[in-house]
Length: 321
Image (cartoon, rainbow, N blue to C red; front, side, top):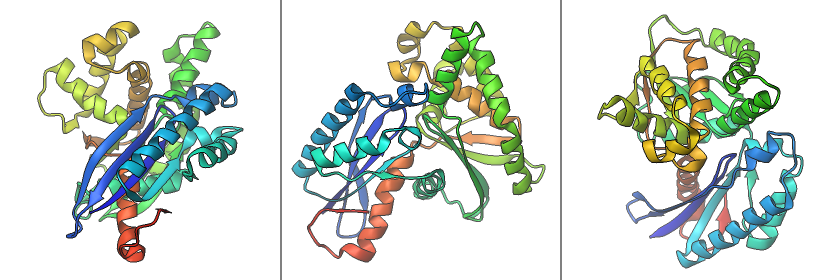
């Protein structure tokens, strides 16, 4: 058995996953850890990452390294996305993590993020038979990729993640404007770029199949069951999205965790995330929003699997891809 690990240093949380590959090449996920460190709260409000936040990240990576050593992990991939891309001192944090834990973090751009997400999705869904729109919502950005017969025809990374939009709403409230108005105004400012993307895609008038990835999509499908009493959580229908949002908005933030089973760091970002979904829905007819429980970190794991097959040949030493 070869054990591998992947890290997703996102805007709303830091995730670690460990998997193993047997002699037949079968991959199994054996451990997942999620640490609710919201890097985007500081970055998207115009601040640097504070010393306290950086210390917390470093401390967690020291513990992650211990888990890797305990499980005899032979290869890993650690990627950081929008929060560290936009942070004035993100590179400083990357250096601090490496010095303390030996773990190298790769600061990736939106296009690389989209490619890793596609790799994750195609492990669960055959993307070669039909056209799909891959739609990933992170804390700081959203990635859209149009696939035709499994090949990327067009893709875009947009600064409209759920944590980023939450901070926009907080700023609006401080200025005497409702958060909802703040969400809509900010998203409207991005609409010309979104319109250009879909114009280039040259979609037909038929509704397209959309695959939503990231924690907010996964939670949306579970809220479908909780709020609308529909058992199937594999997808959400477009006309159900607004109904789910309205029920959540009517529920006080402190009550959302108990009533809907939301974590504290999901209860506040789920509404901005749904506004993002609704905004994209206004540009293109959608058939269904499929919500597989998969995301960027899985793409990192499968990327390592590819590299192991071509480069590793059983060497038992640490490598980062």
